[in-house]
Length: 79
Image (cartoon, rainbow, N blue to C red; front, top):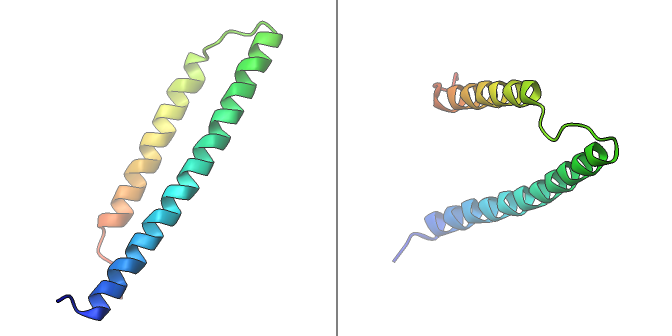
């Protein structure tokens, strides 16, 4: 038998995870819409399909962001 408080806490975590999953799906759908629009605009104005300088910048920016978030998550919380 699982303690009701533990069961309630588990349910709360699972609801949070479900909400996050739904938000991620919506955000990805919006991102895909934007990238499609970028492709259409580039095609309309005969722009190159790739922008290596932007891609390099974005990769570095996202790596830096991920590293910062990882550092925040593993750092001990101050009281």
